[in-house]
Amino acid sequence: MTIKELIPLIEAKELTKEADLNKEVLCGYTCDLLSWVMGHGQEGMAWVTVQTHMNVIAVALLSDMACVIMPEGIEMEKESLDKADAEGMCVLQSPLSSYEICGRMHEKGVPAE
Image 1 (cartoon, rainbow, N blue to C red):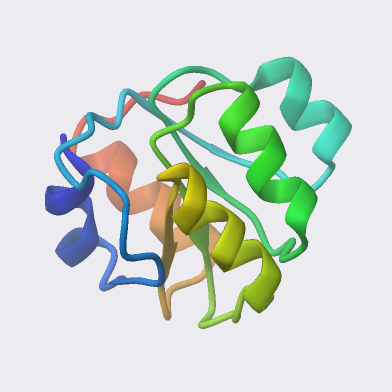
Image 2 (image 1 turned 180 degrees about the vertical axis):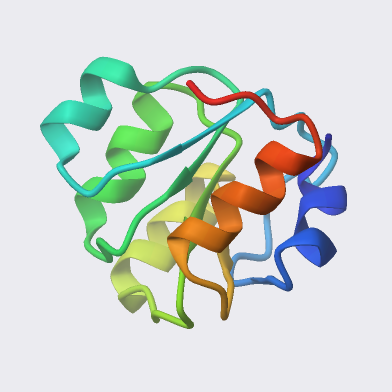
């Protein structure tokens, strides 16, 4: 599944402008403890988190994730979005809960980390 295909599935909107929406989503993950995500992050991961600060983008880039997903309509900090845009990292915002986002991805065959 590509990020472009993921967007309607989770009713998301793209908060960044420079990301490649054809990037493959290879797995999904949800966690808010950044040190834990650093140890479990993977290339192509769609990461669901409520964290909004700059370190989220750094962790996503470190693992070459496909995208970061903000659940429940959470707004990411402007500095973080600017950094994501500069680095080509996709940030999505969904009105759905983390649980429902992951459930929908799993239902479409996106494996867990």
